[in-house]
Image 1 (cartoon, rainbow, N blue to C red):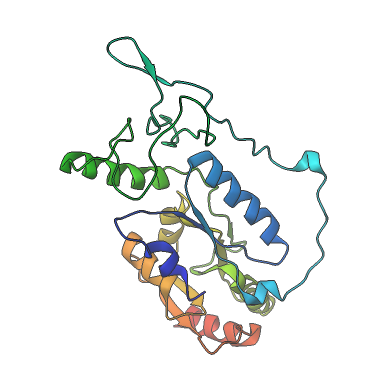
Image 2: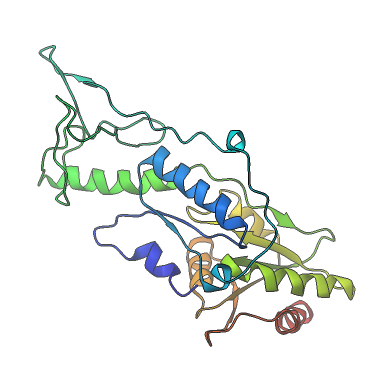
Length: 264
C-alpha cells in the first residue's frame, strides 16, 4: 500500500502506465487477467499492486474452466501497414490504432518489419529517432491519452440506505473495511462503501460518486497516497485514516473511526 505513488509517478519523461490492485486473495486471479488484458490491448506496462496480506491470505476459490477465461490472443503485425506518397509499402512501428492508441507488435526477426527500439524519443509513425520539440510534445500527450482512454468498469457503490458518508478503499484494505461497514450497519448506522480496483485510470464515474456524499473517508496503510490523488483530481476533501505499523487494520478499529466520521 505504500507503493501507490511510486507506481503512478516513478518514471521520468511523463510516461504513465496502468495501475490495478486486487482486493482479496481470490481476486488476485481476476485482477491479473484484467492487467494482462490492458497490457495486450493497449500495449502498455501495467502495475498490479498486491501485498503481503493478500499473499499470506486464503479464501475459497473455484478454478475456472478454460472456456470461461477471456481471449487474450495477440494479433501480431504480418506485413507493411503504411503506404508512402510514392506508393511503396512500409512498416511503421508507431502507427497507432485509432481507438486504443496502441502501436503494432512485430515478432522480432520478421523480414521487412525491422525497427528501432530504445528509450530515445521516436518520431510519430515512422519510429525514427526524433529531436523535434513539436513531436516530443505530441508523443508525451499521446502516451497520456492512451492511458486515459483505457476502458475500465464503473465503480460499484454499496449503499443500501442512502448514506451521507462514503468509505473508499483500495487493495487489501477491502476485508477490514467491509467488516467495519457490516458492524456499523448492524448497529443501525448508515454508511456507503466503494473499493477501487483501477487506480490509473480511475473509473469514469468516480467523480460523480464522490460528489454524492458529504464526507469521504479513505483508510490506507500509508500516509494518505490515494487520498492525495483523490483530492488533487476531484477537489474533494477526502479524510485520510492512516496506519503504517506493518499490521493490517482491525474491523473494530475502523468501525470506531467511521462512526466518528458519521457523527461529526
